[in-house]
Image (cartoon, rainbow, N blue to C red; front, top):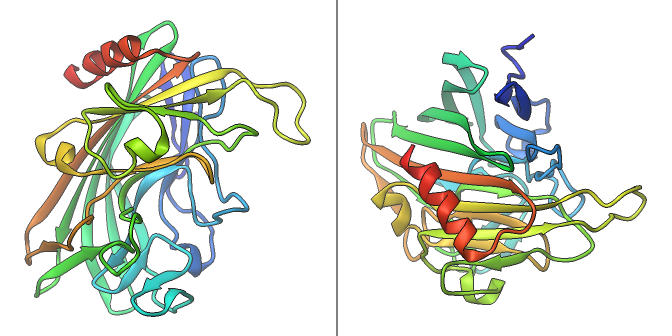
Length: 293
C-alpha cells in the first residue's frame, strides 16, 4: 500500500526509496520533503537522515542556504564578517499536492515559504528506473519559479564570503562509515581534485565497513551523479568525503543566481545507485544509459 505522505519508490517491485512529504522537524532544520532511506537493489542504505555531524542533512532533496536572506538549508547561516551564525531566518518547503504518483515516481508541487510569505513555487519530478541486475537510477528534476512581485537571488556561503562552500540545490547526504568514500570523475580522483569543479559525472564509492555499534558490514556501493541538462552541467559540484560523505550541485558558486519575477530555474540530476565498487568505465557506461532514458 502506498501512502500519499510517505510514498515508496520501487524498481521492478523492489522498494528502493521512501519519500517523506511532511517531516515533523524543528524550524531551524528548514523542514522539507526528502528521500530516506534510499537503498541499492541489494538493500544497502546509501543515505543518512539528521546525522549528529549535521542534523539538517535530510537524505536526498533540494535545499538552498540563502534565498534572498532566508535559510532553506537548515542550521546556521554564514554571515559575511561574522561566520556561521544562528539566525531566526529559516524557511520551509511545503508539499502542496502530487500531480502524478506511481510506484516508480511522482510529480510534486511545493511552496517555499518564509516569514514574509511564499517566495518560490517548485515542481519536482522524481523517477526510479532499473538499469541492470545491480544498478538503478534516480532521476530528479526541480523547477523553481519566483512567485514574488520583485527579483529574488539565490546565494550560498561562498557568495557570502566563505570559500569552498558553494552548496545549494540538489544534495545527497550519503551514509557515514569508518572510512571515507572514494571520489572520482572521468579524469580526476580525490575530494580536493573534484570539489568545486565541473564534470559530466562524479562518483562516490564506499561501503563494506561496519559502523561502530553495528553488526555486519553492509555491502559496497557506488553512487554516480550526472548533470542531465546543459544548465546543470555548468554548475560546479560540491563534494565532501573526509568530514562526511555528501554530493550536491552549486546553484550559486562565484556569484548569486538572480531570478526575476515569474522566471524559473530548472535543474536535472540523474544518480546511478549501484551495488559494488564501479570503475571509471562501468560508471560512465551506466550514466550514459541512465541519462539517455
